[in-house]
Image (cartoon, rainbow over all chains, first blue to last red; front, side):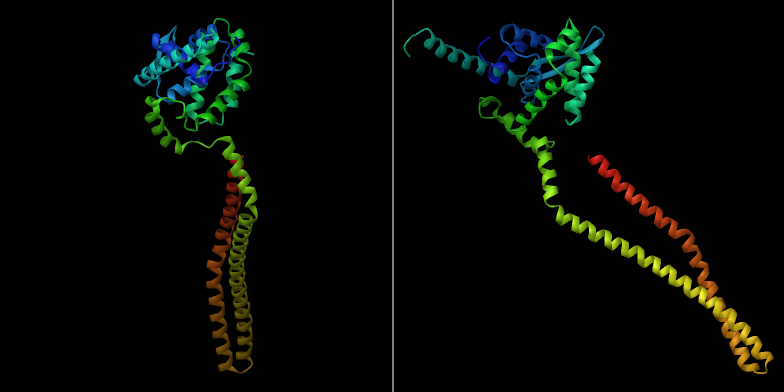
Length: 104
Length: 216
C-alpha cells in the first residue's frame, strides 16, 4: 500500500471496527492489516490512546479457559466516530475531485 | 524466540513504566500471541520486543502532551480534564535525564553542604569521645591520688603528726570514693554507649549506600 496512514485515520478505522462489534486486539490488527500495510505492533498504542481519551473501554470475557480483553465503544467514541466519518467523506470527495480531474 | 522469552524481554524494556501501564501492555501482547494462529510467525512479524516496547514508550512520550488540536470538539472537554489529571504523571525519560544533569551541575553546592554536615558529625563524635576520656582520666587520677594519700596519711600518723595524718587519710578516702563513683557510670558508658555509637554509624553509612544503590 503506497499511501502512508495518519494516526487520525487509524483511530477512525479502529473505532469503526469496534463499533460494529465488540472485539479484541489480535482481530482488530488483522482486519486493519487487510486494508493497510501497518506493522503488527502499531495497534497497541492506538488502543491505549483511544482508551485514555475515553472513546474505548475494555472488559474481560472468558474464552477457552482464559480471559480475553474485549474493546467496546463508549458514547464519546460513537460521537467521535460520526465526526470522523463526515470528515472522511468530505476528504474523500476533495481528493476524488482532484484525481478524477474535475474542476473544484 | 518463544512466547515466554518475548514477554520477558518486553517486560524488561518496559520496566520504566508505571505498574498499571506495564501490566496492561504485557497482558495485551500475551493475549495477542495466544490469539494468533501461529505464535512463531506472530513473534516474527511483531518484530523484536525492543522495537515493540519502543513504540509504546515513544507513543506515551507523545501523548503526555495534550492532543486537543486535531481532535474535534466532542472529546475536547474530556481531554482537558485528562490534562489536569496528567499533571501528576510519572517522569518521562527526558525529564529524568534533565534532573540528573541538574544534580551534576549543582554538585559544588550540595557537595559542600554534605561535607559540612559530615564535618559536624565527626566533630560531635570527637566531643563525645573526649568527654568520655576526660571522665575516665579524672576517675583514675582520683583513685590513684586517694590510694597514695591514704598510704602517706597512715605514714604521717605513725610518724607522730596524728592530726595532719588523719586529715590526709580522710581527704584521700573522699577522693577514692568520688573516683569510684565516677568510674561506675563511666564504665557503663564505655561498655554500652560506645558500641551503640559505632553500630549507629555503621547503620547510617549502610543506609546511605543502600539508597544510592536503589537510585541507580
